[in-house]
Image 1 (cartoon, rainbow, N blue to C red):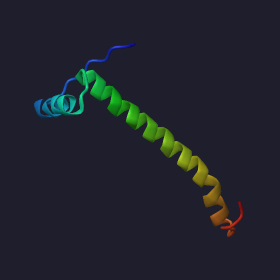
Image 2 (image 1 turned 180 degrees about the horizontal axis):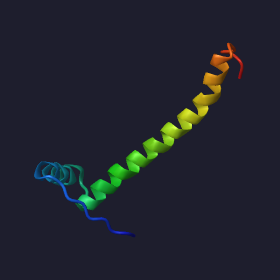
Image 3 (image 1 turned 180 degrees about the vertical axis):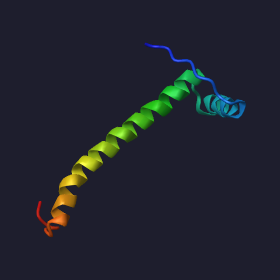
Image 4 (image 1 turned 135 degrees about the vertical axis):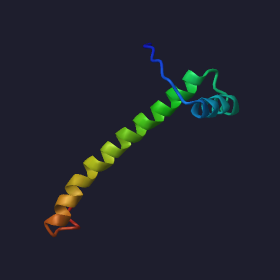
Length: 68
């Protein structure tokens, strides 16, 4: 596993520390990894949705909204 060091304003670090304690993460790294995983999954989902919408928008533009 690679390592990445980040600098955070005190308020953000306090928030991260609170989330670690409240949500049962072992470390702040675990919390940050979870946030990144979620964002990555959201990114992939948005890409799939966009990919599915391109043909639909093309059909609508052509005046054929019900063509599969």
